[in-house]
Image: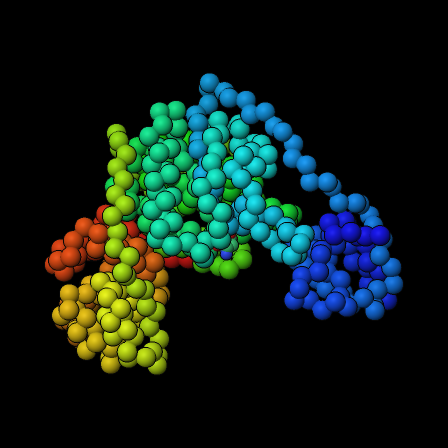
Length: 421
Ligand code: GLU
């Protein structure tokens, strides 16, 4: 009898299917059998259509191999801190879905080639999907990273992270570490490790290589193309997840990636990057009372009042085009600014720069005291405003800091080749 986890062949009247038999999730009707195909997708087959089920291979008993990790004196040491997400997910045969289960040590078992480039230290600091990350998690991650950075033997830190909000964490860490003596590299995976097309392996190798470089920045390392050829190393304040499922979903916006990294160890730098500082400085003082609002035709005019009444101290608006909001919101924004709330303007176009004078509506918006955030991404402005509000409550000072390039988040010169790279 076939059991969950077994590789099976299912024969129906018209077709044969080969896949791993999944335990039936509660949401699926009981007259259906679910298998995971080689592509990684699950399909349900109605029992009445099934002529035969043949077990091709029994499920392995899940015993972990005990690996001995050899330390090489010639190699640098990289700390991998795992936080969860797809990169640390595997199939849950109880629910048929994927769940976060791998500890950092498991990454070495997963991709032993990383040991060619570095000695690996490993620690699991969280186990969550990144949509559940909160500013508290960013603080916790920053503190853990800081501990690793201050260890003499550590050359750099890799953080494995769910991809959905990885760019928020990368941006927040960029502001939380005004001084960095070693690189911090965030890495994730779009496809879980049980799938043939998983990007985990190459992303992991390239991120370890990145963490051995002499760079004083927070970066994101992910597949550059749909092939398994090389990864891009992106600046943490200029990167965004731009696709729901493609392996090359992460893109540098209004900036070129910092480098190309090949899994054989080659690296080609594409732009200048920040050289390491002598020391590490951590600043975790943030004000969490910041909202990020995406405006749209027909948006409720009370949205600004809602946040004012809740005591928010900052609002980032992802405006349309050059940074527009519906005209009826301008009065509301004026009221917010008068009350001392910082209102920052970014664009939902992502590419390009906001402008405060091209149209009269932009000039009116700017006259309210709203702060136009140059070419900063909305998510980056959101975390930066938390950081800035942790330093000052004065609107003039907030404006000065928001419009000042602190961690590579503002690019004064956007060239043509930075579009859709
Ligand atoms: N939504 C999950 C997360 O961001 C899974 C996606 C992923 O890791 O790619 O953690």
